[in-house]
Image (cartoon, rainbow, N blue to C red):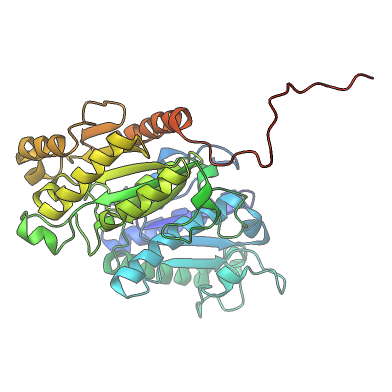
Length: 409
């Protein structure tokens, strides 16, 4: 378990920050009863703005149970710091929405004194307070000899809170962003973009050709009762389906949206009951539909009929450009056991598209394989959309058959 992620602005006395990280790690290990060499936290002092995130950093942000932010004037100006905060805050908000408990796992600490009005409103609402800190910042506790006892007590207290929070509130994994460009920053206005939030308003994205509609055809926890015995990958809604649990516990639709958005697509998520509506919108505006299919959904007659009818329409009209992705996690033993029957039923439903190896991807065994297949599918779908799409706007007014000529000087 990764107990905490330490976020700070590069250049804020990096050596002192590293010392704080080491001191906190030691105390967390002691409080958690772990070996002295156990990895309990994460800090990255190498990353510069605009560089690709290391795989270790991306994994740490998606898995850590607590987020410690060292606040300073430089911190609020740093886009990477804002991106790290945003990613963890999204995970904590999702936990609170699902469980109904605020996990108190995001802990901003004052590292450098801030002048009045310099504290970002986001941090001001949840700033960590401690009687041991008082009006003193963490950096000051470390630098002044007279505060050494207070500093040790503070680290002891903070480590206890981190361990308790991590063990009491198992915040689910979040999307693993591959690079800085694809991650939003909570401290900065988003740049002009085609991307809209999940389930957001139609807006301009509804007219944007570079939009992908992820339609989730999956069971819910309740519907799975009549179909299979293992229900841990399901939630209350089809879009909660997380087929790669426990390796990656976040919903597949959320993961897919992040991948699409990192490649400049606007992304939108819908359940199977919205397929006709999404298909119509995609047809009108030269957009892409990606069906994320739980093979077990073929056991439900109503869902099979919807997918079969859509497959017939898609072949007949050639619009919208549609891809089908069907995961089969190696960790899901029940699905592996019944895969032959389930995959044959999928091929029956998608019999006219299942021979298209570019847009029909079945038996995707791991989330790494999914991460490889989805970008390839989107590229193929986009190219076909550009070839087969229809022109939406014709020139206004009357047209002339005469060849245009430039006036002579």
